[in-house]
Length: 348
Ligand SMILES: Cc1cc2nc3c(=O)[nH]c(=O)nc-3n(C[C@H](O)[C@H](O)[C@H](O)COP(=O)(O)O)c2cc1C
Image 1 (cartoon, rainbow, N blue to C red):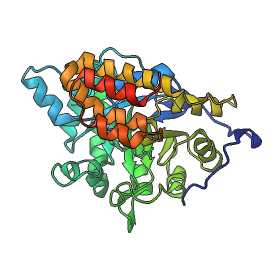
Image 2: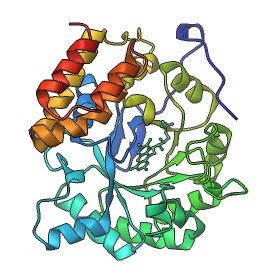
Image 3: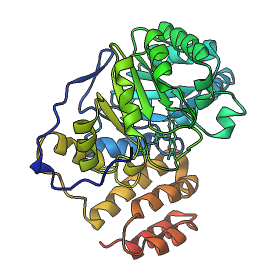
């Protein structure tokens, strides 16, 4: 069922009673997770989120296990998708994908023991053709729960004591929802938490996340936490979900892309505190420029500027003049031009 539009007057109904969310030995406080998003949740984005605060656990983009091994064999620098992972603050989850238990276990072991990440998450939800049809991974594996079980068992064994989690969709197609059955497989194989995006792979991002179906999984899990994901875009929606559905945690993806301060707002709402207002446009500009500097420090000015285009577009969502900003920022190729476009659209 779609979430109803809820009042922003949050203080009128009692706060949901939240239990501490443990993923293995990792306390996720608050029980609000920053989702993995390929192409977006790199170190720069994670650092911006971290500086605002409020995300109980942050995740990298998905990392292809085979790519990781291949890069290593060629003694190349580790892949860009592991940018920051070695040194940044914990807790941090790294998400990996593939369909080969041994490759995943090998990479999981390195992430757990060498990189010392807090959580190794396995992607069983990606609906993109390159991952499903070409690599028989991501949501493709939802058709093969036995294979999922073997993968999780091997990765858990290799990563121990680091917790291993799984992220799924409800199923591949709307006419065959497999989440309840898959949840049992995930738990029996030794995973420490299950995250569910309340759509099928067929849905891609269409329609609305089905929170009734997410919550229906709960009785199928005996001991591990259930983390719900889909369409959470305000503190009010998060409160509403915790009030109405039996989930142990929630995960936020798209809404945080242009509003990395959303987690801080959600955290305040869950604690019954006044919700910090959105930063002013001038503060949002400063946040975007800080993001830009982090990206350029890694990729250099030219590549960094091109990479920043998409992040800058996210920051402009809902802003007056957003359309003109997006059109202009899509053309920027150097720092001077980027700063000019920012200065002409964001107030000082
Ligand atoms: C651009 C983009 C990239 C994504 N990349 C990943 C990914 O690497 N791994 C993953 O498990 N999910 C990925 N997702 C899915 C999100 O983690 C999340 O499940 C989905 O967007 C629903 O949550 P939301 O409604 O809060 O956006 C991606 C989503 C988007 C929009």
